[in-house]
Amino acid sequence: MARILVIEDDTVIGANVCDFLNARGHVCEYAGDGYFGLALAAQQAPDLVVLDLNLPRLDGLECCRRLRGELHCDAPVIILTARDELEDKLMGFDAGADDYLVKPFQLAELAVRVDALLRRAQGRALTGVIVAGRIRIDREARSVRVDDVELRLSPKPLRLLEVLAERPDKVFAHEALERALWGEDAFRDEALRTLVAATRRAFAQAGSQLDPIETLHGHGYRLRAQ
Image: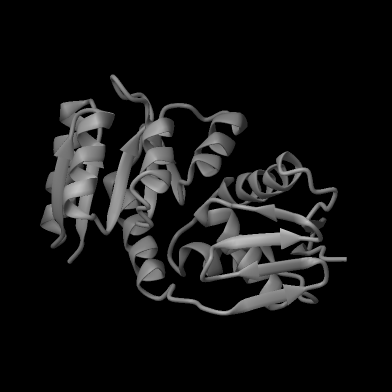
């Protein structure tokens, strides 16, 4: 059982999501706008947040940023969006989301993603420092340093970098990397490619000259740490 906060201005969608997840044994709270959602998150410390992007008063991206920045909420965040352009998905990861689901969606698919993220969150108490070439990852500080440049990555790009840095010489097949990030039973479609692009963009925006991820077409991805 998990405490799940659903922030969605469409009351029909919100009710359907809450009813479905409640029937699966979770406890759902509902907020119809971003400000109310932040207030509930501050009061109740949810285990997972389902967050719509098109919210009144405070949009979903800003709500996600405040969850991560002001409330220091590290609960997984699934974004619900009708926007399926690459730039919209990149902005979601940049804001701190862990996954996204494009509307219209099936409740069964949402449940699979919720379960996968909750399992991943329960086993994520990772500590220590990973050093791979020019990249240094401090898991407790949740920070990354490349040479003299320090980066603060949002949760999912940071986790992607951790997985690659744990085996810096390994080429990760697309499916293997998906399983490491989202679990065995969750199919991610374009999400991995979007996440790779978001991670590369975070390095560039921080002023690093290093492209951290090498794409080997037909094979997968590996860390480019040198």
